[in-house]
Length: 264
Image (cartoon, rainbow, N blue to C red):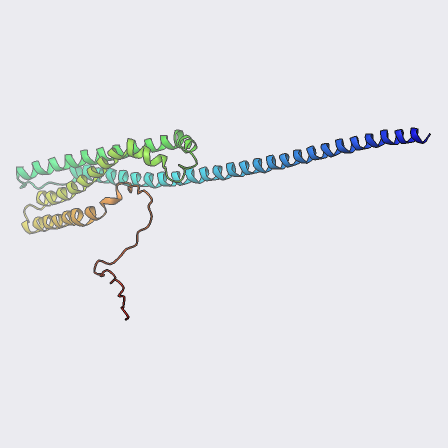
């Protein structure tokens, strides 16, 4: 009986050992699965967070692009309104001004040519700015969002879709409109000077005073205003980021080499 009991104990003991080993293996497998689940969960949360941050960056980028476009739209609208105002003033001057009968034919020819040229120049400037405004509206409503979403994560901070589109599509027309506007302002001053001779031709002093003031205004416009603020018309050039260099005054002498004293 003792031998039978020993056999039974050995059988049950081996069964318990087998079960314990199986349970241990299952526990280790479960722990590995839990570890993998935690790693997957952390990875998913990291990907979601990165996607949220990138989405936020794209939203901010889109808003910045819209602010830049709105500033450009205001600029074009201001130039277009000023061009329309000066063109309307020219037409009203042609219609309503009473020309003196003693005005010479040369002054009348010059006055008519300047008025017509100024009206044409300002009209072309206004139409160009209006077309650019329509192009801006089309770009914002149909292209801008897709261009921003097409940027990679590295390009969000260095690439401007509006910058590239404006330089390739509208920069030349905008520069032309600006030069037309400047030419229209010069013609407007010339028109005022000729208007003085056409209306006040009998009073040479008054006509000469108007001409001198217009010449001074034209010189101030070209030499002070236009030359100083010409850079505002163009986009600022993109500069590649580089390491800052230390500046050294030009009059500073190089440091003297250290002197080594020789001791006996």
